[in-house]
Amino acid sequence: MIEITNLTKRYGQIKALNDVSFHVKKGEILGFLGPNGAGKSTTMNILTGYIPYTEGSVKVGGYEIMEQPEAVKKQIGYLPELPPLYQDMTVQEYLNFICDLKSVPQKVRKAQLDDILYMVKIGDIRKRLIRNLSKGYKQRVGVAQALVGNPPILILDEPTVGLDPSQIIEIRKLISALRHDHTIILSTHILSEVTAVCSSVVMINHGKVAASGSVSDFSATEGSVRKFTIHIVGDKSSVQKVISQTPGVRKVDFIRVDKDASVFMVESGKDVDVRRPLFNELSRNSMAILELRPVGRTLEEIFIDIVNKDKNSADQ
Amino acid sequence: MWTIYKREMNAYFRSPVAYCIIGFFMVLVGLFFWVRNLVQGSVYFSDVLSSIVTYLTFFAPLITMRLLADEKKNGTEVLLRTAPMPMSRVVVGKYLAGLTLYLVMIGITFIYPIMLTFMIDGGIPAGRNFSGYVAFILLGACYLAVSLFVSSFTENQVVAAVAGVVVLLIFYFMQSIGSTVGGNFGAVLQWLSPLKRYSDFAMGGFNLASLFYYISFTAVGVFLTVMNVERKRWN
Image 1 (spheres, chains in turn orange, yellow):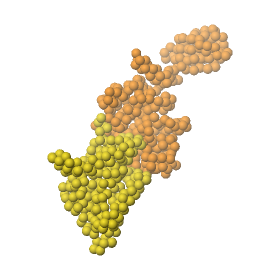
Image 2 (cartoon, helix red, strand yellow):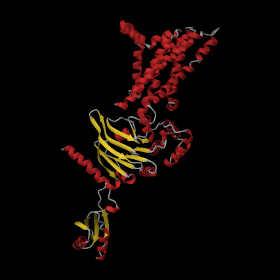
Image 3 (tube, one colour):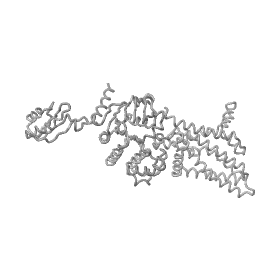
Image 4 (tube, chains in turn brown, yellow):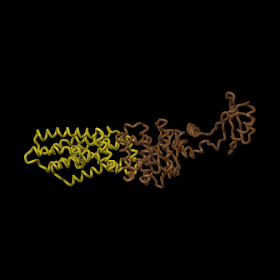
């Protein structure tokens, strides 16, 4: 659906984007991650045809953006970082204006707007001036604007920034609801957001792609726990002995004593889940498990690693 | 294009901008009507218009200052640039909205020549009054195009207005600069001056070349604005 190849953007001497490539498949929700100033907004602005690129190619639905900008723009609904709202219009007038702008046919207009108002939950404020709306509502009107014309691709630049926790959850729910018939690119620097709604991730830093893959590649999921900490009641050395004798366990390290329990770090071999046999062994020896916590490399850790690694190599 | 036009017309009349501009303009027109027609006894309302031409230097930038600058400041420029509509239509739509406001202003002044026809036995000479209006409208159309072009360089309304006034003042003095400089260059400046043609026109000398001049002047101004707005795509 979206193919970005060797994309480079220069502002004078500064390279805002350097050889960025990634693809987004139809129906995917791509989390676009990076620290502030990494080039997220630049990429999105290029993708939506707001600014031109210097080198490379950007294809959306088979159309090259520099050659057929109109064909590309028709397919994209864009919510920029700052929702582009006219303060002197009411919500209804504004959305009508957007319908005109995107040439939505008169026949389907009313039904489509009603759908959008319902979905974004702004039906009750449609007669109010945008100027007087709260930030959360303004953000939702911004989302509604992106949905007008029913574009197959949605590009949302930090859609939850500045919202309160319940509004954030609402927007996330909305994005999840949209996943069925839309391809979505979502930029953010909130990592839990990615885990919550996205199916794949591209991380960029200093204008380069630092990592990419599906969300499950990045996070420790149920099936692939290979390292965990475990709190067990009992004598330290005998517990350690039982654990190390359990088949599949590769390494056991004692960490500390926590009240009457000992805490160990357990590692298993590749593709082996030792949690079940371990439970059986421990219960046969009447050793109670108080806590078991997988130690996965979370998205957060990976992200910070990447940012730090880049910083170190830049320092040297 | 009409989408943008409609939106701009709404924006003008929803904020105090349009009312302030029209009100201020009417005060000036009323003042000059009193001086030229009532005190000095001229039968030509076009004399009033000629006196107001100087002030058009200020009115045109006031009308166009928010058209482009406001979009940049509001962050709504993104909306227009990422919409499946070429920027040329956006710019033309905005220009036409500005022109409409200007025509509304002028339309209101029709009450004065109508008053004059009732006050003077035998009415007023239609020809010169009419061509005065036509000239005034054409000159205004040019001025609006120039100040729209100037405003496309900035996102600040005040800067847009001030720069517009400065550029229009250069045009205002072009004729006298031309005659001072003399020679071929001076002749070119005089030929280019929109005001010199205005006075010919307003005296009743309808002239196809001047009509063509005004229309192309306006078209070039709007075209350059489009180019300047589009430039961002290619830099």
